[in-house]
Length: 69
Image 1 (cartoon, helix red, strand yellow):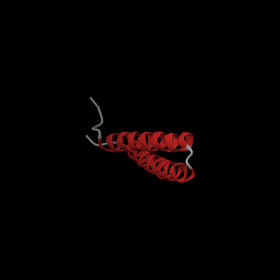
Image 2: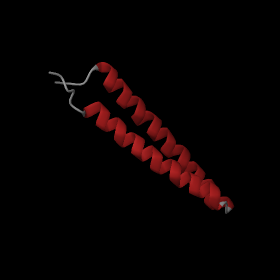
Image 3: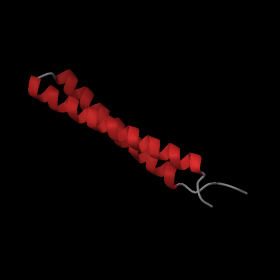
């Protein structure tokens, strides 16, 4: 029993969105470190963590077995 195409696409969208959040977070983290802006650096670290979680969810969604009778 495999996933439907919709589930696979949703998983891929989560993976892509998560990676974009990770990149934005890394950029904010670096800019915050360079400028000495601790709030921006913290925001960047949070964005990176959220992005990692979203990628993990996307991977799980794309791979999970479909429950069908």
